[in-house]
Length: 456
Image: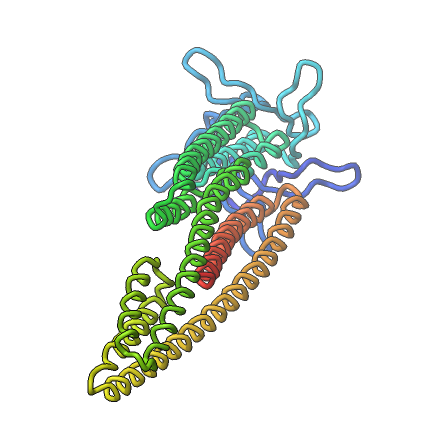
């Protein structure tokens, strides 16, 4: 198709108000070429035309003619005729130049535009092409939604489109488009619900697994399995409205095990502390015998102490070896008291004892350094989490402001472009918010792990 001539024949406007004329939307020439509204410098883009057979076509390509999107019969716009049936009427131009959607049984069709000029065919074609752009907008949305992994974020976009399509100023198969929108909405909701059911089932399985381990006394194995379950729980993702209840059950099962484990090791620590006190007493007794005047009796007494030592259970690991070494060396010194090298053995024992004490003090110093480092790490992570929460609050403020902007947009002009841009921004920011919330949960879990290690 040749490019449009410079001579405008008809201007296309929004419906006139009570006082003011409707805003200009586009133009058509005498050859029924249709273009968008002119700018200050450049002419508006051509979007289509009405050919000599009264077919409404989109703009021609380099090789092929533009797609037929409707036809004009008299002063009315219709769908393309089928093999057996005539195409459905979508709207018409009345005697006052108003572009109307088709009449109902009782009421006249809604006025969607105004032509100023003489080319009724092009005026109808303009609004058919507007509807075609709306249909293409839906098709792009449908393709994105059906390909998307996270379909839930598209439900709002579909519902938003459903809210304005019935009032859109265009001529076309609105009933068909609305049916497709509703079908897409139903499909997305069903998919989200199926996904949520799948997540609920996965988390129910993790809960059952955690509940089985929660009564186990295989402390090391069970703890490793529960930590693995906690990692898999995060991988499953949120389960919607069921998430809080499921999380409480899962957390209760995990807490039950770790509380039981803590109670077990607390009792074990108390018993080991008691054992350590008994061994400490045996060490003191053995050490006191080094100064006995009756070394033969002292050696017999040491043998009795050794028999008693065997009946006492282990002390805490960090002191058991030290106590054993202390006791053993005390006994050795008693046995060595009868030998001529008593003074040499006694001096060596004292030297070894001093070295153990130094090493123990060094160990305690390193333990304290490690604890200080862990406390610094906790403070840093809490500050990081705080900064993330402030960032989320800022993001949510932006989302709220953008939603207000979308709500207050008026139809026409660049409103659709602005709305799509803001909705994309909202989607991107919501993804970042979820990522930050996930990071906060990871930081809090790290803090819990560090605090648990500090309590050991």
